Length: 156
Image (cartoon, rainbow, N blue to C red; front, side, top):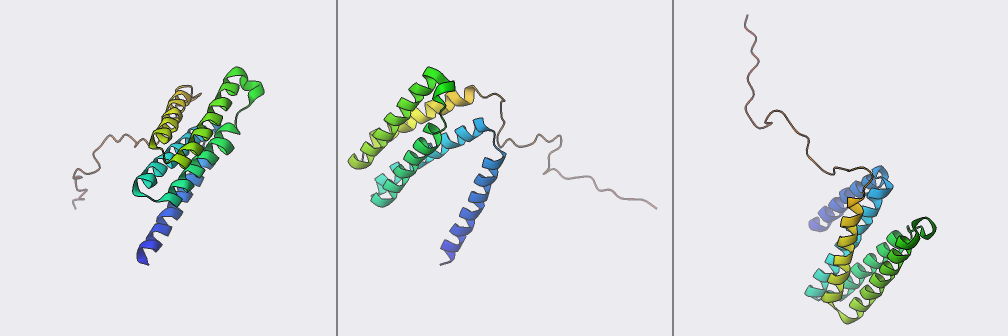
């Protein structure tokens, strides 16, 4: 009972973090987030396949398909993107087909294939970023925050 409350609380914080990231993200960063989401969903599918959790595997694959179809593929502008957008559309269609087939055949090989394609596209997308966004980099401090600080005594 307590563990499920903790999980719900952690999920709520994660959801807020994601929603905040989406609101603050540039259109370019949103595409990166879609790639990340699909890659994670496929990782989850591989895990669930390995543990025999058939329903969870199917849900994870469905999530990856939804991200590819309703996020990545739907965001393509074939008129403005020309041949590249048409090629990406075909590649996304292929990925969806492979994920459906992987679900039916319980194929880790097919899941890994699509995951690698997504990673390659994500890397390429990040390389053409209009602004080099630095994510989650800790601020540079000129002092060590853990070192002892001198006492500030006032003498009378």
